[in-house]
Length: 284
Ligand SMILES: [Zn+2]
Image (tube, rainbow, N blue to C red):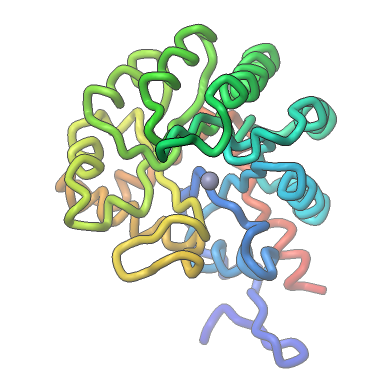
């Protein structure tokens, strides 16, 4: 295969052959995948420009911070997910202050089930601490919601001015619109590749393209034909392709616009792709 060098029996990228692309996976968990450095390299090789890798609890925040010591330009976020709201929030806030991520989160609310994983009061306390810090630092928040859209919308309204994206949004068009009207972005994930995901597909088509970002939540959320934990950040290409097909527009337009949205949302540091670190690794 052209573009590959073979060193010690391992195919490595030739620096001049990394593809030009503008596609960005706006929410994934590289540190939940074995050998994240190789997955990152494979992702960039596949034509994905970069990813936002998100922490969600004490252990994963540590793992993300460790990964970015090796890939300093890799965009990352740190946060406390509602599933882990029993953990202390203060060390997470301190970690955000110390390491300057491009975003806060994964944060949010999860009220699925007869008895939520943690009491709503505690989940809200943890969420609000992160919304408050994000607003003070002018950082966006990557938000999780399950069976909690109304409660999350109320919280975001209380922290008016907070920026962010609802990742893997699966609510109604009207709910999405309410968040967009507050200036938030809507994350389109793997569900859009499934023909039965009618609500997700309606949002993907009906919302303006300038308020959408694409993502995988890899390895956690499946696509048509690829189930967790086998999802990888390069599957964001499938998400973008489904979005383009549903909207009847060119894939390049989806890539260009969602990449512009990512830079508006996460800032200039989202232009960082870790390509330079991968190239350095390739040349060792
Ligand atoms: Zn996630």
